[in-house]
Image (cartoon, rainbow, N blue to C red; front, side, top):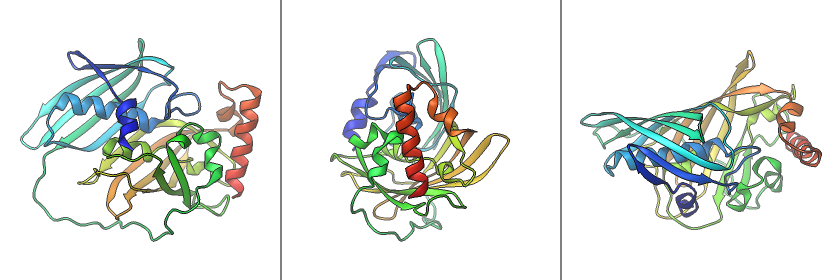
Length: 289
């Protein structure tokens, strides 16, 4: 799995905390801009390189999404804010050309002593079988080349509470790490799409992820993701996200803040008529399955 992310998050260090690459419409491209999880993975990669200490693992990443990226040059400017005995605090600014599009902060920690427990165990659901073809549509049009999707939550059409999710299975072998967890936490169809009031959401305004103590693996394994809409109002929604590995380890828990608009406005943004028709068809199919 990480082999693809290694390629898509490969960065050139220009010095003074600046890391750059050329962005293309690759496997993690969304509707009109890259998926937020990919941008978080890109920021995490730059911050990891700048920290330069394998003994310090990422335990938190918070990112504000300030605008959309276009294909072309992208830069991540990293500042190590403080290095303590056990915690390193880092910030990053993501720019597309001269335009600031993201602000991120992260914590890297050494392994400390303390009790190990999991009070939020992985739900008991059927293992992956046949991929859900609806997930090959508009909303994950590019990432379906990289992952198969097996829905296990939100299978009852429009309903409250709004939830969605299931197994995400990599199509390619390889090791994985926190970057993969970030991508997997963000590429599923947003649960707001199942709301009875027929609303839709634009890309994220803010996403904060807290990583578990062990977010690595030597071989690709299925990830189970669960998204649930927790509350909404004043044009915003709050979404809870949990991600487990196949063996039951919690890889991350996250919260995501989105803005809410009509489906027509969300799906019609920067699309021609044929793309809009395809988007609307996929939208209605997801809501009724």
